[in-house]
Image (cartoon, rainbow, N blue to C red; front, side):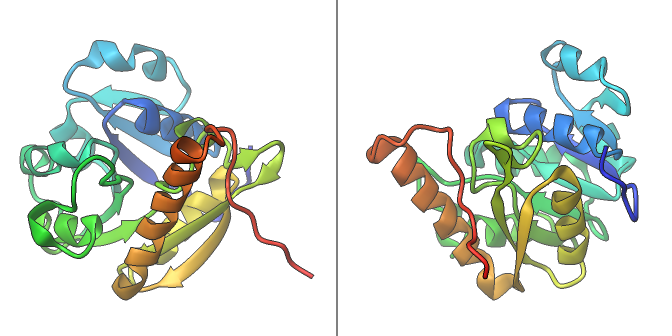
Amino acid sequence: MTELPVARTVAVVGPGKVGSQLVRGLARAGHQVLVGARDASRAAELAALEGVSVLDPAAATAGAEVVVLAVPVTALADTVASVGDLAGKVVVDATNAVTSPVPDGYDTVAAYVAHLAPGAAVVKAFNTIGAEHLADGQVGGVAAFLPVAGDDTGRPVVVELASSVGFDVADLGGPDAVRLVEDAARLWIHLAFKCGWGRDFGFGVLRQ
C-alpha cells in the first residue's frame, strides 16, 4: 500500500467499468471510498473491499470531500441534480464525450460540469487511459502518464490522489488546460479503436 501524506474520503458516483476500477485503486491506496450507486447490487463486489462503503449517490457525496463523476456524459445532468449541492467540494470529471459532442456547446465536458455544479472545484482527470489500468495506475508494471487540469484549489488534491494510486501525474494547470486533457483522451481512444492498438496501453514520459 502506498504511504499517503493525506487519506481522503472520496465518493465515486457510478460503479461501472471506470468507477469500479478507480474505487479499487483508491481503496488500495488507503483512502475511504464511498460508492454512489442507485442499484447497490451492481456494487456488491466493491462493498466487500476494505475501506469501501456502498450508498445511494446523494448519501455518498454528502459524506465526501472529493466526488468523482464516473457516469456517461449523457447522464451528467441527472446525476449532478440527484446528488444535491456540491459547492465547496472537489469534483473530478472522469468522463469523455465519445459518441456525442460536448453538451450544450460548452468548450469542454469539465466546463459543462462546472455549470451543473456551481461552487464546486472541478478538475479533469482519470479519463485518458483504459478503465482496467485505474486500479493501479500502471501498464506493464510502469507508472502511466496521467494529465490533470482544472480548478486551482482542487487540482493539488486530485494530483495527490492520482499519485497515491500509482500514476505518473502531470499537473497541466488551470481550467484553460482542461481541453488538453480531453484531447489526450481523444488520442487514446483513436489509437485504441481506430488504429487497432487495443486497450492495453497508456501514455508515458521519457526523462533524461
